[in-house]
Length: 478
Image 1 (cartoon, helix red, strand yellow):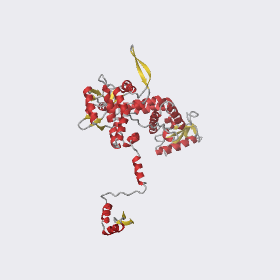
Image 2 (tube, rainbow, N blue to C red):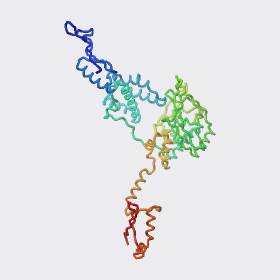
Image 3 (cartoon, one colour):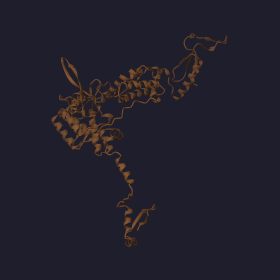
Image 4 (cartoon, rainbow, N blue to C red):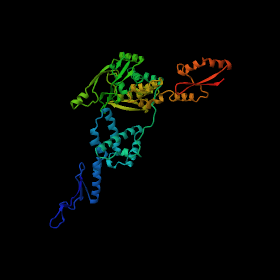
């Protein structure tokens, strides 16, 4: 059997003359007993032979199952593991990598970075969760908890942990975002906000309301994406910016391109916008703005040229942060949706410019137009499956989870149907084309039934289909 214990203080074979084992040069130095010879397991030393035997038995068992984890590998701190091993192996696109790195470096490492991986227990997780919720909202805490879970999953794969502590300690529940229903605007609010935007940006509202586009998809939409003959708009890219403020194109969220029906009125607004503000040619790298280092990266990041339909007054692509602060929020304030809470100064060389500070209201940012699009579709009775495809969701379930409260009369149809079942003295309605209806007509024309009707003046006949397809007739009132 693999594995054995070596005595480092005494030689293996006894002396031929004395019959005793002679001392080695290491006698009295360090730990005496060393476990060796287990495939894939690093040697380990112990002070007593009993400890060495116990560890050897455990290591043999775990090694045979493929579950051996050397505790020394788990002594690395969370911060060192992330920086040296986990993060360098990530291959996320900039739009994902930037926010992820920010959350990990600003929250996970400061709160848990000094803790060795092997020392993460339920108490450590509870303390981390409590500290995290004092720093960020529940929705952000839920995302950060997911990042920590991913880090620890990788530590398990790297044989630094036997099990993921987050999954092992079920008493510590992950933070959850507060349940909030998607908010939609009324037509009056949408029109008011649109009218307060610069004329060249009013079409952005039309794209959000008429197509359900996300902000990056609207800013990345090109003239060639409009198929006026087929009456559809092809959503096949979005405009994104990395953490260094460099723009690039990439696929829509989830890597899903889609086609969205183009209404006649939106088509008319699109043509009018193109006449007033002709689309501008824009060339940007695809997927990643970093300079390629290999032939494959050069192919993957080959620049793409399109005719953008939304640009700045200088003919540049739109930087979403500047647009939100200088165009969108002022329009919300002018329409009475947001309040101005203060003022800030910014210096540009020798000049000082003052800008208003607005109250925080994430529910009224550009994404509310997408929610409004969904609400209008559902109130009109549109299929959840169709709406899910137009929104680019991975499944109709996601659409239903987000927008079920927009469905008019949800549950009322079933309530009405059941109420009809329980109606007293309910008379069964027989379809005109059913076999039962045909037999009923024939029987009432039967001479015997006619005689009964003429004698009694009024006869009620009850018909019932039998299991073999026949008909049972009962005169229930005469």
